[in-house]
Length: 289
Image (tube, rainbow, N blue to C red; front, top):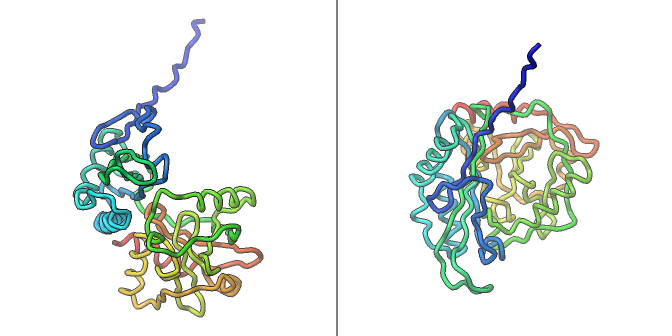
């Protein structure tokens, strides 16, 4: 009998956008002199398209502009809401992502120089990957978390932005991996709850929602702002505060938020176990937006 030979499926080549140019995603684009590589001199945005629409584009553009101003990188006015919608749509089409995808826009200070830059123009890299879900899905299994306290986050004028200086999150990620956790919570320099590795943190205590205030050094998360808006419009008490991590032992619920994953509920912290009623409610409201 004639043997049938199965041919391996041909993988479609995917692309990134580097300064308005499509480049195969496995090709090198940066030199050793790149300031983002050398000094972490830049910032980034994580975004999501659902059903062909870039979610919360205006909020992402506002935060990106504010972050670039804080870092004194020129061009924030050009990387506006229209730019984000246009470029993510172009990359979606090029990579045939259909209608659901996640993106990371990395912005770096172009040019050379040592610590002192020789210019403040910007360059960017836009990466994307396809998603199967067309909405924000609440996790079926709750997260197991712990507090990472080997390093703490400084509270300063750059704390609220997603800068490329991410070693704190890398070290917290190694801690998470070492102890087989789903997430690790980060403290600020004063020992108060700040955020998690990839998300903002919310705590439900005495039937009120609390989240670390921006003055506590947390990232000014886009989804954080959206969830706060949902709570306000539905008359759900939500307070920005200074939060002692000890409250995690007494809280009724804990959940985390980011622009790609939406809302994820926490099941356990040490021996403490949490409910997820508020997480379910807010996640439902989020998908109605």
